[in-house]
Picture 1 (cartoon, rainbow, N blue to C red):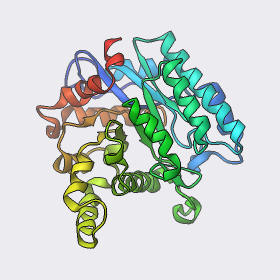
Picture 2: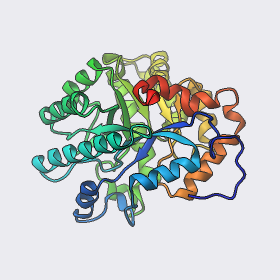
Picture 3: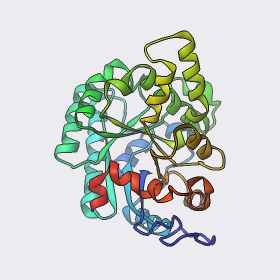
Picture 4: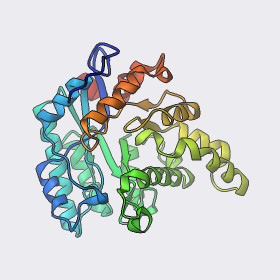
Length: 330
């Protein structure tokens, strides 16, 4: 990664003296890459998989001024045809994440994957990830074989995550019947934001955010379409009635955390800040699936925008230190 643009602050492009903490960044360990390449087609209509290595990741982090990257896998997660294959891939990915952290604990953390929709196996892998591998949190896809994460099917998993006060980053994946609505285009372009929005509206209106209050959710990509649609959701809920009143909808969304991976500027960040404020906003680079030059461009925009005036350090590092104290202490 290189950039000819002048750096606005010390400490790499992002300019944080202690280094930023990147909560939304992806790795592709060898077994995971092989599993995706073994599918009938690459996921999400993407043309190719990016390359990844820890050394390449660290080089990009140094350019940006990222102290620690908290690794997770992107869409489609670890769900493969067949229960045993899914469980095996989850274990392999989590072992690779733990090994990467052991090799460079000063630079990496790890969010473990679960072999959902297989609940009992996911509970066992969750226990292994935390108690044996030292995971810093969990990553979940928005849906698993058409079951969204607020589905009652997954309640035992959410109960255990709540018991552990887990941090869970939710990453979008292809919705059911994706080909019918994507028109053959790359699914991340439009469907990913709507998937994230759909999943969190269901978590809030279905009562999961209230039922599991210790579970700390991170919403990907600047809140997706939520900053624009949450007011409509709250108004409609108040109009028709239901388990969650309109004012409560606002309160529940304000409890969530929001990362800035992707195209936060010029429109999305101001909308997000005007809706929930900046107290739960975190930095995410979206490496490795976002090309390096784009990651740098997005970071430069964040480093110079007036919208983060007075809160820049907290967004880039301070809030993540509170969510991931072990990462901050490394």
